[in-house]
Picture 1 (cartoon, rainbow, N blue to C red):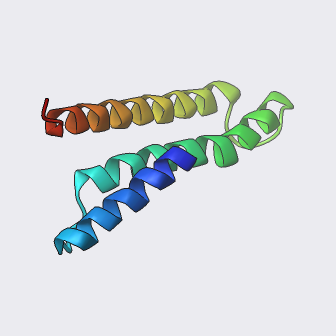
Picture 2: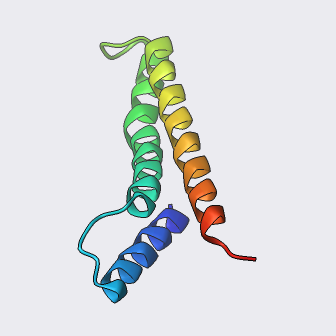
Length: 91
């Protein structure tokens, strides 16, 4: 979470220094990864624990599928960010 926040702050600083007012993919990719992490840990995890105990409206497998989808989206966001960052580096 700290790395995502750092990347978001760095992107906003670069945008401010260059005078850009638009939000770029370099902002949305770490923000999306951060959202998936927070939603999975603070929303889905407690619901999954309740589902294991037989409580809540959704089954454990349904919640596990949502968790897996968030993990997949987070992985794609981080890979896309790494690819975009590596294409900007000049050797």
